[in-house]
Length: 245
View 1: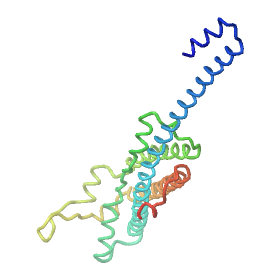
View 2: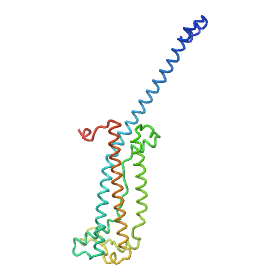
View 3: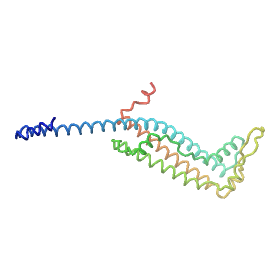
View 4: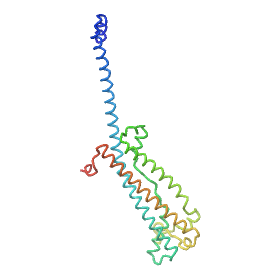
């Protein structure tokens, strides 16, 4: 219809009408492109909100997990200091002290890996949708969290090399039948530990590793907290109190 009208105006040499017809065509194309762009932007915004809502929930879980590990490492730091004091000063004097020393020796190797909820973030990265996150501050927080998780794994690998060798481990901690006849009991050879030439260096290394992991995982918990606070601003995310109501 429009093409016919343009041809008619050209034949009639009605240049004003021809110009108006072309303006209508151009305007129609521009409006169509704008509508298409608006629809695409609306879809992208909806996807961003979905990602951020899931990441917000995941990071809430991760804060709890990171803080639990911080408490674990803090306990291991105190245990290592207790064990060192017993090696330097005097052996445990009663059953309670002996049990605490045994507990310290048997648990100091416990450096649990991060078991985080990263499903929302991983989906964002796997789909190649990181560019959907429009807020630069939030993007930077995500990058720092990703880097911190990688560093945490590398530290665990490094600290694993500071433990007793296999032969020493077998001598230090023994598994014996429980006196009650039910299950097993763990015993620690105090004299072997106290007289071992590397005991103090190993316990000191354990203390440093737990202190380092405690501080680093505390930093990671703060990153998760900062990211959640930023998501609240960017995504109009309801507070945890509002979610529970």
